[in-house]
Amino acid sequence: LQSKNTRAGIFPNNPSIGDTFTQTVYISIEDTYTVLDVYSSLVGSGVPAAYATLAAAAVFAFASDFSNPGSAGIEVTIEYYYGYDNDGEIRWNYRRVWCDFYA
Image (cartoon, rainbow, N blue to C red; front, side):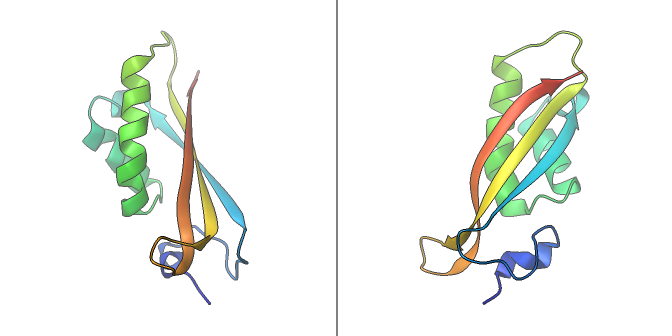
């Protein structure tokens, strides 16, 4: 079986149930002024739009809640899991997102 999301081009070919995939994106601090800015940066870096919608809110909240003077931007790490989704289909599923500032 092949994931529908594999068409996005970022996921490994021929995954097995239980596989994980981690994607790291660096977003300039100037691109975190709005959720739409963050979303556009994520999609522009290859994050599938459906997952970017979810991650953008988390990244924007992180950027808004924490400040780190002198940082160049935010490092966003997104973890995906290959397995069954809520509809019983096998695909790559968005799992978690981590954010940190980078210099």
